[in-house]
Image: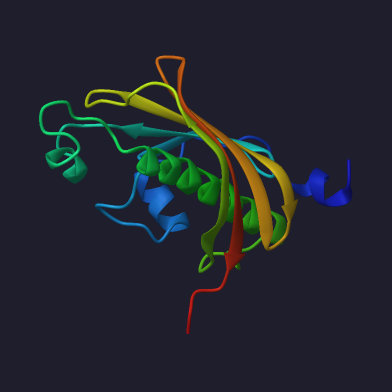
Length: 164
């Protein structure tokens, strides 16, 4: 264990939607994480998305059989990873120094979709750091409904300052 690891806080959670919005710049209709139920800084996080029929994308995807678009499931995983990355950056800095950071996708790999996500589902968004090199981090994520794999992917993101 390094000195930085020993200073990292233990598991935290839950983080409600106000806490999620304090860590991410996303807002309706693009905020896709309602709550983070557990977070271990520098390691992993589990977010929750309550999928409702009121989601704007269901009007066209698909009217006769509403299914959450796979790209939005991956985005929800990435937002959960963003919460993990920004929280970890703040915790390791010991300040609010990372409060204005943005997390940008750099790559999405091995995305697979296993089960449709429909209105009424509680989507569990599980992400883990694979590598964390400060500004660039790699994650692996799994989206589950009732313990069943709905989607999975690996992705790379960059933590950066917002544009001027």
